[in-house]
Amino acid sequence: MSKKLVAYFSASGVTENVARKLAQAAGADLYEIKPEVPYTEADLDWRNKNSRSSVEMQDKKFRPALADKNAGIDNYDVIFVGFPVWWYVAPTIINTFLESYDFSGKTIVLFATSGSSGFGKTVEELKCSVSDTTVIKEGKVLNGNQTVEAIKEWVDELNL
Image (cartoon, rainbow, N blue to C red; front, side, top):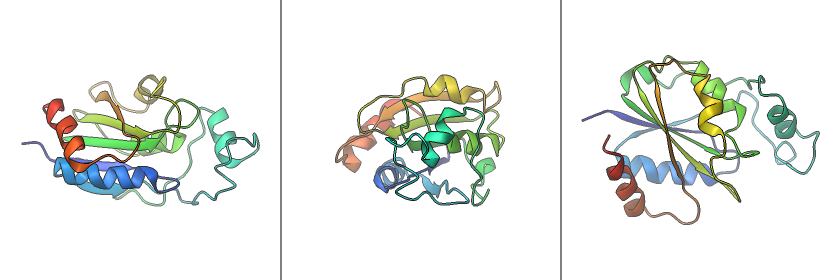
């Protein structure tokens, strides 16, 4: 039986809600990926090309600093990594998170929340942030009012 972690970034609480249900469904520990400087509502205004999130997403090399690096990745075999989809990909803080730990030999399963899109090029854009021995699986966009039972069915299908 593999030891699992659900690590998530949530700017508005939507992804956090799903992450908590996923941790319960998967029998996993929970870890919040927090930016050193929290995002404000103005920072998240995707309609403003000068908002913090817009500026960060325009520069694929930008890496927002993390508030801590205490995820204890060494203790886990499978890490579910969750985030809201921004501009059809994961926010660059997810790259920061992946580049802050050694995921060699581990399996990462992505999950996301999104107002209107799927994963887009997320897997492709995150692979550069982990070693070649790390398996990244495109998981699922978990929108709406997901039940723990429905999420458990998905987790069971993954055979982790």
